[in-house]
Length: 359
Image 1 (spheres, rainbow, N blue to C red):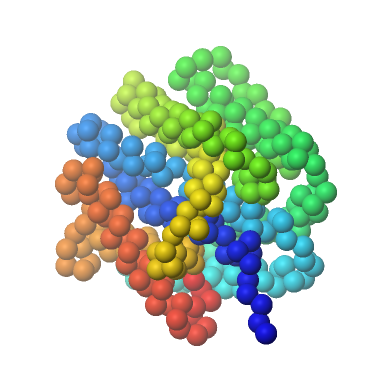
Image 2: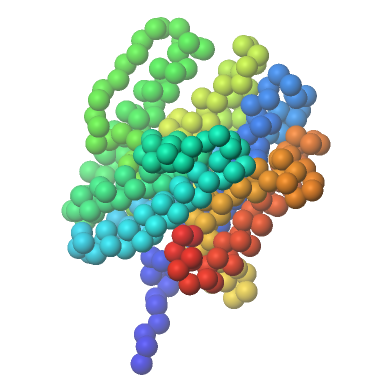
């Protein structure tokens, strides 16, 4: 008799599926609102505010995806050979396929003079297409996952908290103070400590694991307040440092800015508890639909720039840009169209043998 998977199976956590489905929509919102946000001097100010608010709401999408990976991968125990054999098919095959696809896309659609001999160089240098940097990031995190699994399995909660605090100060707070100094403090100081193991996205990776493992239910009200405060910090901060110089500055949008770290972490925690509350109450139909969106999230990430470009250039016989009319409704319309078509393509590709491995 076959045994059914338990609800606690890491691959079937409902709150993780919700996060993936929502965050990939957030990625699309960021990319469809980018032209509005950066057009500080050319668009009416209320149009810019719409773009700023939508883009701020979607901050931290990539960090949250990294947190999901840490939450799912770090608790597992398996040999290094088994781990890398699984990751090879899940990251290397899509990496090669989509790198080649976007190189051909650039040559056919954007730059016919682009030589095929440039392909190896662009792929190695992460210069094929703007969003593929995520594949390089994930590959790097996979390389150190076996090491951090050992650390996670034996470290106490206090030790992990120490690491996260160290990472937050060194990777987020100190660099942020250095970058905002010319706007506010004017001290001229450039302080840094090179602690390489606590730098970059590895902190998000460990943070996802920590939040999944920790008992955080009592923290929900305070975390909700942090989520709102960090959102307002991003929205207002971006305006306050842009207005005096009449040029948009995206410091508060950066994945390592303190407000984005807090925003991503609080969102992750809130979705964890919301998903746990919703799971027993949600109907099978919507539950399955969320699971399909979650399953397609990686593929949606990979293909959605194609539809953004198609709409911007009117390749389907009509134009759909976030600044065609007021962005307050054009950004959601554009994002939902791109999201829906991307999902439709990915869902169809997932039904095709062999080809399904690229999404």
